[in-house]
Image (cartoon, rainbow, N blue to C red; front, side, top):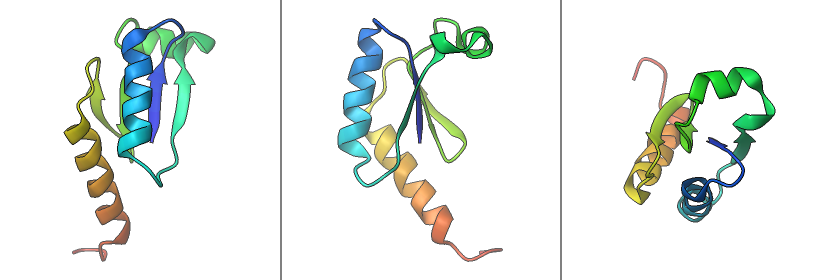
Length: 84
């Protein structure tokens, strides 16, 4: 799971705390977009952005249910038989 953030962003801090609480046991990578010009161009002011298993599941105001469903789906897809 990746959370794209930026320094000084209150919504980002809330999203980080929510993701930490809702996605226990999941590897979480925090990426400050301001450290990469390409990411600044890609996201602009549209942060935080949460990506789970390569899918963007939320931006700006992140809701707990979105994180839970995204984690559940990613875990299911990781264990589902191929062609299932």
